[in-house]
Length: 402
Length: 64
Image (tube, rainbow over all chains, first blue to last red; front, top):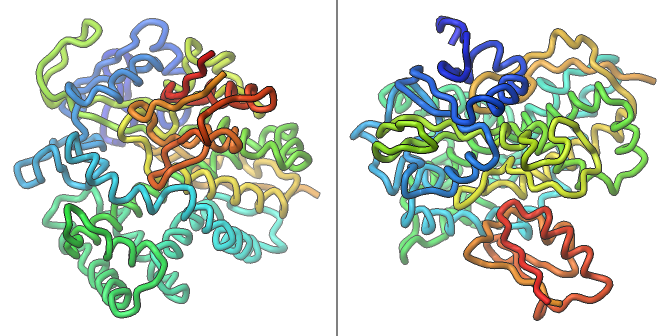
C-alpha cells in the first residue's frame, strides 16, 4: 500500500495498511472508540470497521447479514469464478451456514485437544533444535531465526511429511504464502510444484497409511464419500495459510513484550505455572488476527448505510482493548484472572487451530526463556511489523543478557 | 449448585477445561462438556466460576 495516500482521518478513511496503523494501531483504535465506533473507508471499494467489543461480537455472530465469502480484504471482490456462498473458496473459513457446519466438523477432530496435545514432544524438540542453531550468538533474531520456523515445522510434522524434506517443505510454504492472493491464473502456475510435491506425499500416505493429518484427510468422509484429492490439497493449503504467520506473529509479539518488560519475564522464569494465564493475556493484548466479512445486502447498521459487498474489518484485536469489556484494557496484566479475549474470533468461525496455536506459543516461550532467562531488544527501532490483517514483529533482534 | 454448558452457544474456545479440568472436559470436536451431572462442591465452585468468567462465548451457566 506504499502508493496509497497517507490516512488523515481514520474515522472516514481507514486503511489497515497505512504506515501509522502498521506501526502502532492502538492509539488509532482508542480514538475511534471515543468518537466513531464504526469507522468507514472508501478504500478497497468501500468498507466498515467496528472498533468496540460489542460491535465486533455482534457482527461476528450475525451470519444472516454478513458473509464469510471472502475474509481477506483486497481491492477486488470474489467473482463468479469462485465457488458461490455458502461453500466459498476455502471451506470452512470462507463458508456460511449451513455448509459451514459440515466442512468444520470434518477438520475439528484433528485439531481437538487430544490429538493436538500429543504433539507437544515434537514441538519441544523443534524449538530446542532451532535454539541449538543459535548457540553462542549474543544477538538472536527471534523473528526470522526462531518464531518464523516454528509453525511450518509443526505443520510438517502434523502432515507426516518427511523430516529430511524440511527445506523443500519451507520452500513450498513460501510459494503458497506469497501466491495465495494472486490472481487464479497466476496461482495455478505458481502452485504447480507445490501440487506435485503434495500429491507425491498423498500417494505415499495412501500406500502407507499412518497416524497423521494427511492420512486423516485422505480417510475422512464427507456425506459418506472420501474427499477428492483437490479438496484434501485445498484443506492442506488452508491449514498452512491460516496456521503460519498467525502463530509466528503471536510468538514474536510475546517475545517482543518480554524483551521490554523484565519484571514479566522474571515472573515467567520463576513461576512456570503462570504460563497458561500469561498466554491468554498475550493473546488479548497482542491478538495478531483480524478477519473480514462482506455485507450481504444493503442495510443500516448502527446508523451506517452499509451496501452489499462492502467490507467489514472485524477488529478482534481492537475488541480486546475495549475498556467497556476489559478492566484496565490498556494495561498488560500477566496474571489477569478474568480474560474473555476474542483473539480466536467469536461464534461459528472460532479459529479451528486455537488449541494448536496455544500449545505452540506455550512451548516456544518455555523453551526460549529456559535458554535465555534474561534478554532485551538489541535495536528497538529495527523491529518491523507485518502490515495488513495479521500483525506481528518480523525483524526482531534480541540481545541476550548474562 | 450445578454448572452446565449450553452446546448451542459453545464454540470450543477451550478455556473452561484448561482452567477447571476437574469440572469440564472436551468432546471429539473440542467443544466443552461438563463432567458428570455438573454438581459443584466447595472445592470446585470457585474454579467453575473462574471458567465462566473466561468464556468468550458466555456459554457457561451456574444455577442454584
